[in-house]
Image (cartoon, rainbow, N blue to C red):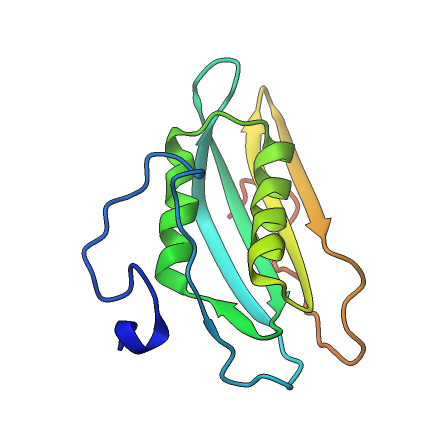
Length: 152
């Protein structure tokens, strides 16, 4: 199947990339091209490293997008997100950078990302970015991550 979809990782043993720059995202044709719909990916155990202390930071990421001609292949997205475990970056840079890379490469109709970061120094930091206004008629549900109360 992956040969016909022209993916590099699907159906293959693929090691975790050492950095986001090394990670390759695969895209496949949108099976419902011409239809406006929303795709959601939730990564409740996302990690990266603090650029100052090198200590791990944890977040619950929610990525919503309305595909255009392609969709992101989920295994490649999982490996891309996993590559951040060795990456030093501030919450804002990491969250917005993920969204911008997906938009630059996939060129969806619309994308938003919510980064719900667990407390660092007693302060949770939430970072939100979107590519523009959502398409008319797109159902955009709440991301479903409550304000910090143990992030349960």
